[in-house]
Image (cartoon, rainbow, N blue to C red):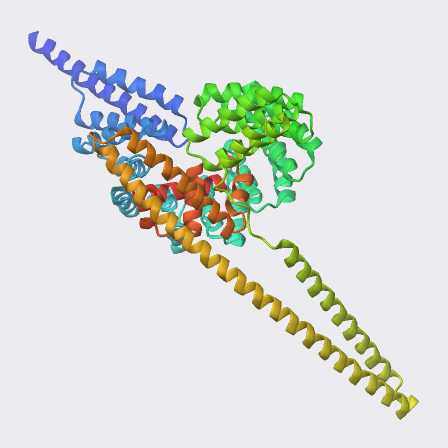
Length: 619
């Protein structure tokens, strides 16, 4: 009897453990299926169920603990907490309990991606991704193999190595026949489209953007389709092909409309239309679509979307010279800016509000907001924004008749000199060239008509033929005479202009080199003073002020040499910070990453990351 009791108890415990393990395994499989949809909320629910199951089990196996660590790591990856994810993936690795090759491939793939996104240790990142690629190839798991290759290509893109990334994905596409889902194929084409776009190969970029959309449409995944179509809009905007951007945007709107889960995409589309029509200076249409975009922002309640939509409406009304409404929307935008980022990104809004108050002739408030803009520009170390604030203050004080203060404001911009540019002379030379070419064409056409007439009327005799020949010769002599005289004149003017430009550019280049060396020296000095606890704060502050002046001078001289390059860049992309503009200038001057790192006192990896962020902002 006792033996039967113990046998029954053993069977109950044994089969109970098997049932518990089976339940946990089912939850893990569900988690792995769901992770491909990138839905953190659903993943968290499954994860909580897994944890409850293991808490009930007093002695979880090493495999169950490893799987739980893997699933936790994937969840933290999904919510962008890469450091926590790395710790959990390392734990799963150390437990050595993963039996499935699929789980191992996922572990190494995610671990490699986290090292790239988190600590930016690309050496380790590539090591783990290469292990994942090798395992997936041996396992003949095409989906996971392609996924790991795409992640490695993204790593290259993040480092600015677009040629390497494109080459890697192209080898994957062309190397062998893979059994891939349409979703994975869509990602492959999107990756190639981005890479070719960055490399300036717009023909291939256009082809792969189109292919990415085609593959996405075959998945029937509406979110993926909407995302891929919207990426195409960014491509057209980057190339300033506004007509095609507009057409593509309306296509996306027709697709996402009446789909509640894609309301955020509708906001993006209408915001893009507002931007397109503003660029085309069609202000009524820009206002119409900006208002629709704003309605969707209000519906979603997203503060960042509301700040952007209020700002867009303010800009349109300002362009339409309806300053009261422009002020209303700009103040609303400022309120949301302050809720999201405090005062970090409010500088441009302060500047816009100050400009509106100036138009409304409310000079005290204009001064107050322009000073706030200037203060934030100093905090953000944005000399261009400081320059704009001072310029606006000069106008305000001039209108007030306070010329002493206006002069003081004007003196603060002394490092910014007017660009040396002989546009009038260039335009006159262009007109002369056009006039010369037109005259030459007329003479050529006349000679051709005479030649045709001569051939048609050859039967009229040698007299007419002689006259035609004489006219031809005279015409040729006249043309050659005129052409030679104009050519000599043009060459002389061009040589004089080239000599002048070469002298000016050499002087500017010398000035830029001096300023670059001075900036580098002062950066190093400030860095050493900050590390020295006994250093004088006033001395450090003085060095920072003089360093800022050197940067102002550098960017002014750079704008002279490159004909307003930074001014144009800031005007087209007002969200660019001073650090973005400084980096753009140094890249334009063809400094190496190491030289840029020395000048800006950051690491070479920091330079690469800054370059990538700058390119993303410039689309």
